[in-house]
Every structure is written in structure tokens, then in C-alpha cells.
Amino acid sequence: MAVITEESESNPMNPSTSKTPNPPSSPPKPSSSAPNPFTFWFYFTLTVSLITLLFVFLSSLSPQDPKSWFLSLPTNLRDHYSKGRSIKIQIFSNQPTIEVFSIQDGPILNSDNVLILHGLGCSSYNFRKLLKSLANKGLHTVAIDLPGSGFSDKSITLVEEIEGLRTIWDVYNDIKDKGLFWGFDQLVEQGYVNYDDPKENNRVYTRESLNAIELDSEQMGRVLGQVIDSLKLAPVDLVLHDSSLVLSANWISENPGLVRSVTLIDTSSNTESALPLWLLQVPVVREAVLGLTSVFGKVIESCCSKSVNGLDLEANRILLKGKEGRKAIVGMGKRLNCSFDLMEWSGSEGVKDLPIQVIWSSSSTDKWVQEGKRVATAFPHASILTHSGGRWPQDDNAHELAKSIYGFLSSLPKPIKESEEILVEQRVKKINDEAIDNQHHIHDDHDHGHGGFMDAYGLGHGWGS
Image 1 (cartoon, one colour):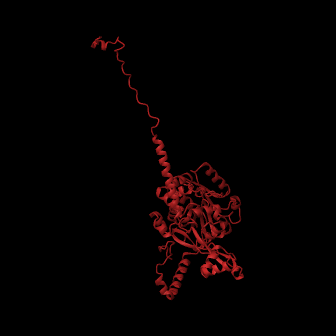
Image 2 (cartoon, rainbow, N blue to C red):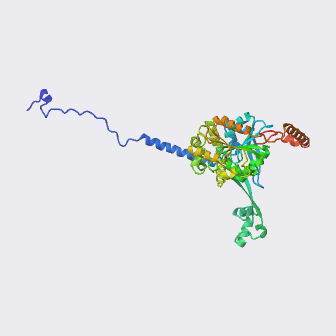
Image 3 (cartoon, rainbow, N blue to C red):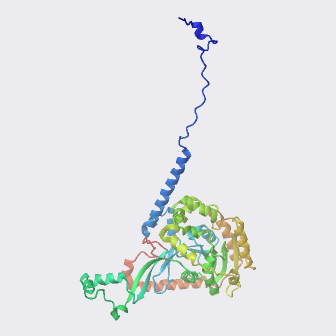
């Protein structure tokens, strides 16, 4: 029997008893089934984005009544609205009037009258700093919201007359008026509801429909003429921005006696506005642009304005989105005069002798700078200046624009106007006539003692007489 000693156990020469040392441990290999955190965050972000877009889309389908919409506005927009008034304009014959929002500043007597027209997608809010700067220089300045924009009406209820046309709705109304048994008797006796009566077929039906306001150049001319007449601005110095030139060009050429000068700020003869309107037409895309401030901000920064603060950005988004503004802007963009020829217009009888100034952005794309040079060639006798802002006016260059406009207007001969004494005399006479007339309407005055102009939201603000 062999005896195994302690020495033999530890003898390295004995293969039967030697111990093989353990190999050095290596780091464990990562399991191929371990989850990738980037995959999780990708799908999480995608899911949240889709839910957000769905929420924005559904919220855009539920209309908000005008008063609730106004009360939900931020302070800067409500403050801007409180400084203006609404003017009633008749665009469509035999149809209701619409309200155009206007804001003015500066001295009225013995002052040049400046009217600012914004481009599609903008509003008078974008020009509030320019308006104030021009007013501080002694110019009576007015800015309006084009119909379909800003605080102006964006939709109108049109009444349509239909003669001799029977519809299912008419059948329903007749059965409702004459009774269900009358309709049942008609079906039993004849197999149909009888509409062969000539008296019935010669009836005239009226149908009301709510439509977004989509103006063409002719209708825009009516708005422009009525605003100038209502505020007594003629002869007026027009400041046209972006697509407002195409909208108002026909009216200007047809009414040279009412216009003293025209200043063009980044306005082109083509129908492409600074804000890409196609973004407001594509489903889901339009909801994202108008529903998400971050997306809207990227669009404005890349196309319209290099520097815009958060409050102003949100104000533009709210005004563009609210009260069916998107539909009105898109509709007006489609109705712009695609055949408008800048060279032909500049040489027309009513424009060729008109003092014109062109102010163009020097910090936009090279393509836009070249467009400015092309526009300048259409007006060889025009004053050509540049500014440091984008295609939309910015707060930080309002003083720069005002300086260029004031210098141009100061170089023009003063328009022939009534003297201040005559205006004061007419105003005193008007006050006396109104006082005499009011004696016959004392009770009515007590019922309507708020004065001024009622606003579109029933809040009772406005300018007095």
C-alpha cells in the first residue's frame, strides 16, 4: 500500500499530484442581449413628439369664441390692441361690413400722413416700434392690419341667394314647416314630395356661409381707399412691406392724386412672401408650425427675422393662428396677382412721376440681395438704401428704418393741405352741430354713453372723436 506523504503531494515532478495554476481572469464579455439606451430614448422622443403633434392638431380643430380668445392673449398683444380702433369697411356689395384694425400715433395737424401696410403673415404689431419712431419725428403715422390678419376680421358671413334650386335641406325645412304627415301624404299619394308647383320652383332661397376673408388686389384697393378716406390721410405717404406691393399696386396707379410717395421695404414683384405660405397648407406640418413655438421660431429665424425675442415670436404665432387666420393668409397668397410686372407698373401713367424709395435688407441671403438690385433697376430715379435687419422689421432696426423714411419724406415738397385755422374752425362747427343734434337724442345718449368705437370683442374700447 503506497503511502502518500506531504512531500509527494507537493512535488512538482509528480504529474499525478501537481496542481495546474488557474489562468488569469479576463473581463466578462458584454451580453449581446443587453438593451441599448439610445434606442429607448429615440423611440421615447418619437412617441412624445407624435403625441404632441396629435394634441396640437386636435386642439386646432376646436374653435374658440372671439372674446375668450382675446382674454387669453398675452399682455403685450392686449396693450397693442388697446391703443387702436376698428374701422368698418364695405368690401362686398350687399354683404356685411368687416372691421379693419388700425393704430396711429404722432401729430395730426400740419403733419405728413404715413400709412404702413404689412406683408402676408405680419400685422401692425410688427411695425409698432417703427410707428412710434416716425411719430417721435413729427409724422402722423398709421398702421393697419390687413383683413385676414392681426386683429382685423378674418372671416365673414356671406349671404347667397339661390333661385329655383331644391335641396335635401329644403325638403327638410318644408316638412318641418308643414308637418310630417304632409310629407307622408305626399309620399303615399304620389311616391315623392311634389315640387312641380311653379310657385315653389320660382322661390328665392338665401344661404349663409362663414368664409375666410381672401382678398384679391381689387378688393384690397377698396380697403385701402376706404381707410384713407375714413382717416382723412390723403395725400398719403405709403410704406409698403413684402407682398403688400402686389396687393395695392393697382389702386396706387389708379389713384395718383391720393398718394404723395411710396416707400418699399423688402417688397418684391413676385408672389413669394417672406413667410413660406406652403408650410401653412400641408397637414400636420401646419399644425406643428403654428402649434409649437420652437418650430415657428425656427421658420421665422430662417426666413423672416434674424433676431426676434420670445414675446414677439409668440405674439406673431398667436395672431397668425387665431380666429382662422391661417386660412385667410393662405387664401390671399393664392389670389396674389401672378401676372404683376414691376417694370410695367413703374412706367405706368399714375406711377412714373411718383416719388419712390426702396429700402432693402443687406443681411439676408445672396438671392434676396440680388432681388433688391433687380427691383432697384425698375426705379432708376428712386432713392435706394439698405438696412441691417431681416425681411421682417425688427425692434433693433426700427430707428434705422424711421431715419431713412423721415429723410426721404423731408426732401419732398409739402402737400397742399388746409391750414390749421380752417381745420379748427371746421371742428368747432362740427362740435356745435353735434351738440344741437344731441339735444334731440338725450335719451339715446344715456343708453349709449360709452362713446368712441366698440371693439370686435364687446369690450368697449377705442378712440373718441
